[in-house]
Length: 564
Image 1 (cartoon, rainbow, N blue to C red):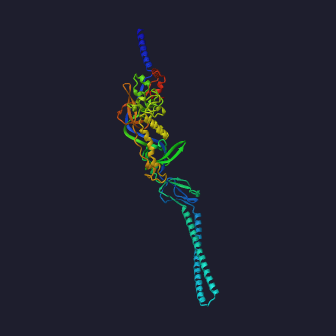
Image 2 (cartoon, helix red, strand yellow):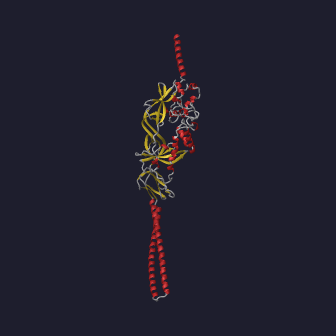
Image 3 (tube, helix red, strand yellow):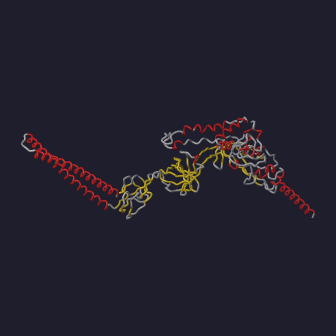
């Protein structure tokens, strides 16, 4: 009996200790998930979709109307230039040609007769002139009367008029012969058009007619065949969104996949960004042509390509998980770990670490919520040691008037510049004068005003006929400048304590981000998420004296331990 009582007491003691432990720990065990710093490739890409098509396609049509009498090509037929691929019924055109030839023969006969009459008129004129000359000689010797002389002169004038009339008849007949010859040539050409040949070497990708079908050629030529010049060289017509087209340049490497070969990746090169926007459902896209080799002819016209344009690529570099760059510990977590809160956790520096919350003019005080965003240098870190470092206040007066739009030294420089550019010219000058009166640096704002002035020479050039330095506008697209490194922060979990590490970040592929410096060696474990803080949040919030501080510090994060 005593042994049973002793056992029950021991079990009760163990249960009480475990219960006290779990009550103190909030009922859950804190788990810190980490990811190692690795070495590999980081590729910044622009994703899009496109359609495969031949580089050169030629539509073969009929220039005359008629019935298809014969077809010499079908789908997928390989044809050579000038090869006969179709024939129209030529009976009607042969009849028209014979009729035009008969008209031409008649016109030529009329021309021969007219020329003969012209020669006869010339002889008659010569005879009348000789008669007149003899009558003139006899009249001078007073052997002929004046009336006979006048009759001879009238005969000469009549012969001349007849000659001129016949000369005009000859020219009219010659014109009729020319017209008849043109009609013959036209009907001969129409007859030749009944035989349709391939204009290029290629492959038939489309046949639109059958034997016996009548085609009508009036305003436009009916389509009979569609020829692809060379399917060993193809192109992808991709639709690049307007938000990404600024990062696309000719010559960039592109990879894509098609549904027909799901396990294979094909490679192409951007060749052209066409300045022809397409608006579909209020989305603006630009057609971008990508050259693709197709030596094995596996890629076919019309296939849908899911492609990625490589904007930037870094091979075999140190990289860190994007989850680690986004992780921000909360005050709850430090309280649960019995660890003092470091200054870095209060929004000083790092990628999306709330530098704007501490900046004057952002509209928040020291306890403002910290937002997550793109990597930016901390406002506080930038101002350390400067005259404006001690003027960062939450009343909107930090720096040089941050409460009036965030232009002060405590505000975000990028946002300040955007607001400055949106001002009218007179407002810009007044703003610069106010900054100079406070002794602040205005060089960046003055440069922003000077930049448009430097473009005046370009704006004053003739809008039409100006000489370009490149053969096409694509040749004027300069390569993208290298991306500037940005400051970020990751956290280490060493000896059950969180340690912040400031790093410099480069390009990202959405999963990993390049580490520009060697502040973290490979295989270093960095914190990505923390779970198991549900039971300690109320106590931590109450300890601060502000029940809203916990939510503010968490910033509406998606999960426990993911605030800031």
